Structure formats: structure tokens, C-alpha cells
Image 1 (tube, helix red, strand yellow):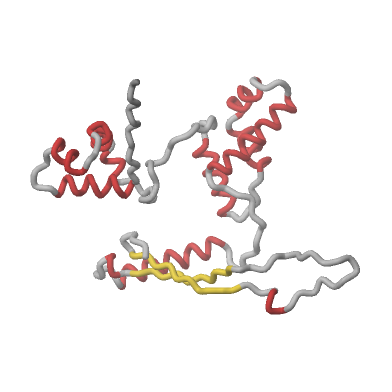
Image 2 (cartoon, one colour):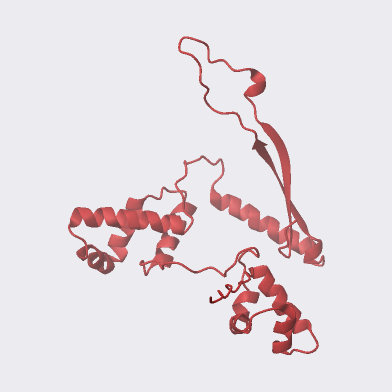
Amino acid sequence: MTSVKPKKQYRRYTNRDRKCLLAHFHASPLQDEAKFCADMQIARSTWRGWRNNEHAILHSKRHGSKGSLGGQGRKTIIPFKDALLAYIDERRDEEKFVRVFHMMRWIRRNKHEWLTTYLSTKKNASTGYDSLCCLLRRFCTRERLSQRVPCVNKVRQEVLDDVWLGYAAHFWDKYHDVPCSQILNADETGVFFDMPPGKTYARKGKSSKVGKSCKHSERITVVLTIRADGKLY
């Protein structure tokens, strides 16, 4: 009877773990990589990968709880995505609508050669149109663009940007000597929970009235504080 060799248990490291271990290695007086890996129980192949990609790991702004640096997955087939995003941002800065047909019109004007090649791979014109619409919708989802209900501002965005930049310049001119670790920005917001349902079952012909105490949700005030050096509280 042959014994079954147990599977090797792989440890999962987060971005925070990688940064801390690399910093700990550089802070140690004896930078012996083999001994460090043995003491920290890190596989040598894993450590070599970290060392080869050390600059990207240490300078990554991805959340520390994530297990990767991002960028995985299927790449977009739109080679001019940066130009298209710039066009979208420009329209939004001017407080104009942005829909799929706006993006299609921009592509037809500025990337006609690519559009012709793309449509030539489709069965017919109708299929090509539907495919392009689907591609642009997925592109928007990938770039964190969502369909929103238009809202009305009393002041244009350019004015708000000027106020924001003016206040930032005044603030840093006044507090430029204060360390970033001592500058705190607090944001207060209301959070609603135990929200009541919008509908209730009731017998036909009977009242669907609900007591006032059941119509309102609970509310708490949450304060999120962040230091000027980027540390959250």
C-alpha cells in the first residue's frame, strides 16, 4: 500500500505583507536572503519574485489587503482607450451627456480606420453595431463609468474647481510647516441602516397602512479621518 503524499500548503501574502517583509529585510543588519527566508518561512522562489518586482511592490498604491498588484485579466482590445477616456472626461467637465452613441460618433470621426477593420470582422452591419455597443458598455464598466441620473448644480464645475484650488493653496501656505502626519482631514456622513421595505403584503380590499415607527430607518453619523500622508483611521 503506497502512502499518499500530502499536498503542500501555500501561504497567501497580501500587498501589506510583501511591503512589511521587504522593509524588514532592508532594515536588518545582516542581509542574508537565504537565512531571512528560512527565519520568515518564505519560499525562495516567492522571495526571488518579490525581489525582481520590488520597485512595483513598494510603490504600489493598491490596497494592502489585496493579494496582487492588479492588472490581471483580459486586456482591452481598444488601443486608443486613453484618448477615448480623455474625450469622456472633457464632456463631463463641460457637464454634457455621455452615452454610447457619443463614443461611437467620436470613434467614427477620429478612429475611422480602426472602426472599419472592426466592423469587417462581423457578420453584417447590424451585428457589428450591436457588438460595438456591447464593447463600449463593457469598456465603461471596466473603467468605472456607470450610468447615473443627471443632477442639477447651482454652480458650474469650473467655479467649484477654482474654489477648491484656491483653498488648497491657502491651506498649504498657512500650514506648510506642520508635518503631514499631524494634518487630519475628517469627513462626516450619515449612514442609514435597518431600512424598512418599500412594500408589504396585505389582503385585497384591506388597508396596507403601516405604523409610523416602522416607516423610518435608523441613522448613525460616521466620521472617516485620513492623514495628509495617506494613513486612514
